Image (cartoon, rainbow, N blue to C red; front, side, top):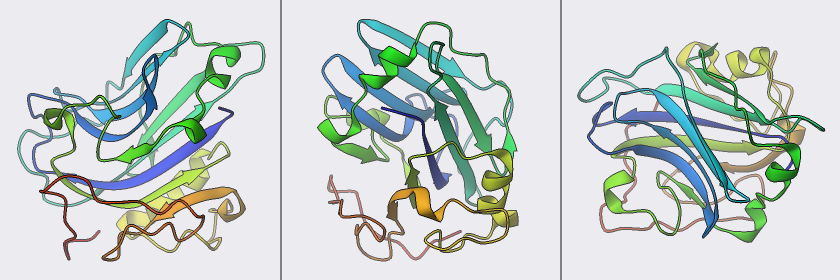
Length: 212
């Protein structure tokens, strides 16, 4: 997989639940990518590829224990560096969070993560995930890009807490042309940008009127 970015609005029922709140995941046996809120309330990422894995966590922007009172905007940028190690940036409410650099996932490793070969799960990890690690709460406006969103792009998407339609550029957001898939969850799981329509999974998955 080349450089990519993803953006979500999330409202966890418990920001520090005993198990991980997966925001999205993709993978098969031996190859996985997960973006999550861990049990300590920090945003983090897990990558497994070519027999190597890394777990990275932010040290700022911690979620509170218990139910969130409102949605927050989170974004992740995974940059493939030719001849070097993968770089990851995580944002919360328009601000980049402090995170240790990845040290052993190379550009060759990242190329082996082929999202097209596995189902992407929103609010869930991957096909082998357990229900205890699914996001308990609400998620909205899930967007996936085939480019590196910069700090100005992410701040514009956050828009002081007010989402807008990402299929059109708006101010410092100029990446609509790189938008691959976009799920607005307006009582459906349609991909309003691409052709990868989704399906609700699980008896507790449902649409609500609670939005950012």
